[in-house]
Amino acid sequence: MKNLQGHIPFLKSITDFFDVYGIGKPFHPEIMCMKLEDQPDERLFYMPLYRANFYRVIHFSDSEIQSFTNGKKQEITKNCLVFSCPSKLESWERKGKLYGNVVYFSAKFADIDVTNRLYAEKYPFFSNESEHILPITESESLVLKKLSDEMIEEIYSDKEDKLELIKLLLDIYLHKIRRIYNQRIEKYSPQIKIDKSLFQCFKKEIDNYFLQLAEGKKDSIPSVSYFATLLNINPNNLNTSIKNQTGKTASSFIQDKMILEAKSYLIHTNLNIAQIALKLGFENTPYFNRFFKNHTTFTPLEYRNQLTNSSVL
Image (tube, rainbow, N blue to C red; front, side, top):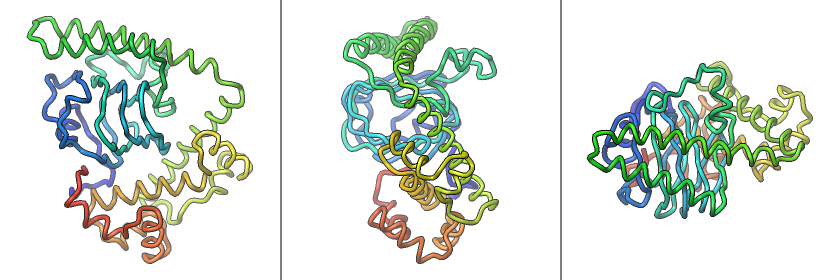
């Protein structure tokens, strides 16, 4: 367990991520490509909330993993892309062997400038508001896999110009992903687009609220009514819209976020249970204990104690 100033770690580099995840060292600090099935079996099964300072595209061909990015929980199985970008809040739990290809790269390596006015247009999938999981067809999967296979072959080669070629392949790879992503977005109905926009605003307000809780600027558990008022929408309509996007009510979404935050405090800080309960806006420790156990089957103390025997960050 780390005694950090904050309860959500920020991994500054690809090398830091590899060290934490237990997959060795990347061949290059700015770019790494590899097959998921080649990662060591002892790597983490559960990754608590974290943010990173690099980009990542995972092409899952067949896997069992549960992703929780910006508050949205999704099951990942096969033929899909998963996107990460600097500062995106995420957490996941794998259930077995992972299959597919993954590419990690820095903004410097890919010549990405987030201040460029065309950034959002060129990389619509690299933002905190974007769809972080993109299902793809079998034919799309084959095209993208061929490109990432080439990058993997190059990174493991001893060719002097391999980084130059990987950079070119990466540009083509991201370009083709953009085509697929935009085609999917264009097919959304007007109502789906409205629901997605509202969901993004809802997530943003939840993240802001929990940040204020951590900083002591808020002191109570947030309610659906509170967020509905902020978003100028009826609570029932907010619930319906969030359920359309996530399969769960807005209240359940908030509770899931609360549990993830609690786990991060238990893992990454030395705060006692009463202090954590206070940080999260609970009126008293027994209430926090009951809430946590109802959602995890463990009390907060049991969860913290069992970490020493588990594969976690």
